[in-house]
Image (cartoon, rainbow, N blue to C red; front, side):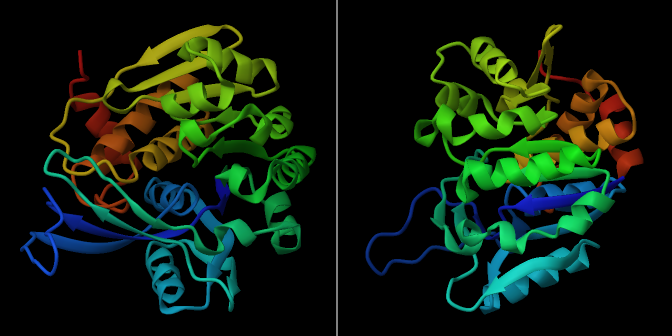
Length: 309
């Protein structure tokens, strides 16, 4: 499985645990501060590499020290970074995440260079040579640009997948509609399905996405697992019962596990189970890169652990 993960790359700075921000010049002690690669492209790349895929990332970052650190972290994980373009006039996207004791993660986010990625930056030959293209955050680069990239992949027999970045409240159907006919696997969360489609019902929203051209919609629902929606019907995949430390990167880990399962020829349900297992493994520690696991370990985890009732 040769994957190009394209789109949003972020350097996360995670602090845990944070119950409240000290007032004024106050200070408080924490247990852990970490920096990790993240984003709907970068975070997905991390878990795909762990699960045995050959991964190269593409996107826009700055020439700043934040970008240097992001490239170093991705490279250390075995991910090709030669297609990350660097901007001298725009900072690398970054987030500060104060992680609450229950695993919730409010975010302080710098949008940065991600929105500057365009058609002139695309490694067209690398896409053609890959088996899979995963585009994270197409709404940031514009639907016409995203549609052009995805259609190129489809024209060359490459399996395509997309994950969204914007919260549902900021989404609209026009932001993604033109790209949907070129998406084999759409991997949004439940809030995004409702927000981007304008529907009040999750299944109705997913079916609207299918009707506009998406091949399969796999909706992540946090602790409730995932919902698979195809033209044939719907199927619920429960999450695994774990003690959550941090939910950062869980959606990206699900995407990676699901896509790795697809690449291995597994059924959509089996792929979603692998996605839920990858998300559960990541959620048990701090950051998108948590967990020293591989495909065999993720499959063993899925076989041995109970799901939420």
